[in-house]
Image: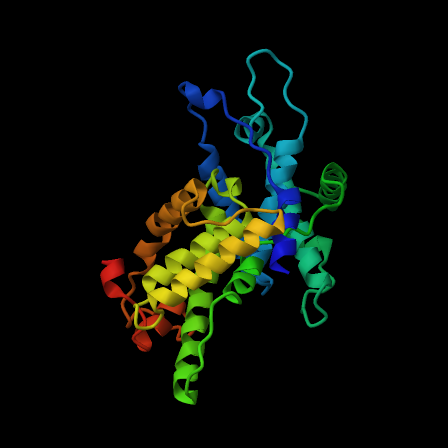
Length: 307
């Protein structure tokens, strides 16, 4: 399954379009800022409908690919990047963002029989737009996006890849009590990596430069750094990394290596963006399911790393 994802994700990659306008002075809102605002709005909507936050990652992939695939401006000196295109028609881009999330939510809801919003109503999204868009506006944009992307609207996400990668974590013969602790460590590691993978979609304009597997791999590497060597010995970490490198090498898809410049840069972005908010006091963390709470509660967290 992991090999298949590593190959498939490349067909959902967002084309890289450099911004020529960024080379000079500009008073417009930076691309990363308005994209981050869209992400925050998407999370609020998904939480409202009680859907998995993975849906936001799918929606933003649809949104980013649609923007990058739109016809380029033909005027001399104009810029083809999504940020500058947004400045041409902000309403169009707001509509595209809303519709991309709508498509992702429908894909998620329709695939799960137990979803309370399996039959997601278009009228609900019209209400969310607060009168800015009609049902016809959203329907027409939906058709445009589906046609532009040739109906490729079910991308793999970092949250999908995290459990596949963690299956590569080596196991050791051990007593029942040690096995219970080992299972707890893997559970905490999974929750930490998923947490960072989930939020990585809001890193800004650079977030779509990385594949889902790169985000998942980097999130796991950063999460492993948060755990003590007693909880996760160095030998197990190294075996995991070697297994991930081996499978990715023979998959014919995305290569995964801790020495890859993209993985190194992404790890640093994740640390800078999310470690500060992980420095929470136990008293403030009221959710016992929070990954940091669990890591602290069971003595798995390496506080020296966070300091």
